[in-house]
Each structure stands twice: as C-alpha cells, then as structure tokens.
Image (tube, rainbow, N blue to C red; front, side, top):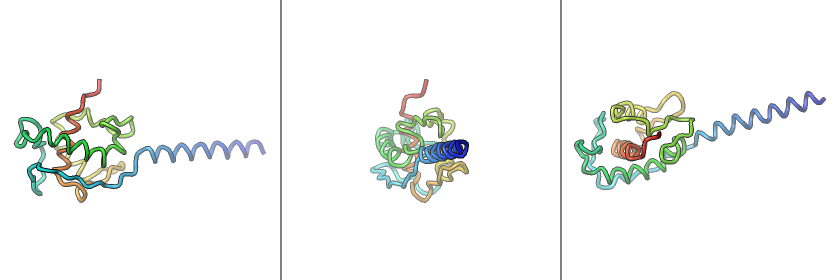
Length: 142
C-alpha cells in the first residue's frame, strides 16, 4: 500500500514538472506591430539588417530599436526572456552576431521544428528587422 502511494506521489511530481517545463516555454498570442515611419521594405526578403547603423536605412536605427523593443516584448519575450535573456530554454539572442542576419530572418519567418512558430504571416520584415535591431542594441552577455 505504501509503495502504491509513493508511486502516485512520484507520478504527480513528474507530471507537475513536465507541465511547468511546457508552460515555461510560453504561449504567445501574436501582437500587431506598428512600424511607424520606418521605410517599407517590401516583400523581397532581405538577408542583412537594413536598420543597422551604416546600412541602407541605418539612419532609422533609433526608431527601429524603439519599435523593436515593443515588438519583442509583445511577441518574443514569452519564450526568449525579458531583454533577450532566455534563461536556458531558448537561444540567448544577444549572442547572435551581424553575420547571423540571414539565419535570424530565416528562423523568424519559418520557425523551427523545436517549437518556434513561423512569424511570416504575422509580422512583416520591417517588424522582424526592428526586433533584430533592438536585440543588437542590448549589452552582450559576459
């Protein structure tokens, strides 16, 4: 009888642990993003952040950071953490470098088979690159 009760307790703790792990990854309801006065980038997918200082629309960097911060908070922070500090369940986005632009846009647009949804029907690339610009503005982890 004691073994049966112990097994139930172990099963209950295991299920609770698995449920908390699943919930910790986040359940994101896509939030609309107002990209303000950022230049419209069109439908052709860019492979380099146009809002990075020194790039085609780099003069919009400060506005892109501001828009990206709001867009990140509403759409990304649930899984990737506040200020892109993931806590271990997802990649630390602050560690991506400018050479990862193509990787970034591909992952955001198409999602992954590990749980990240595709955002291409929800966010235009203006919003995606604004998020990238915001993440690049954050201090790098030590």
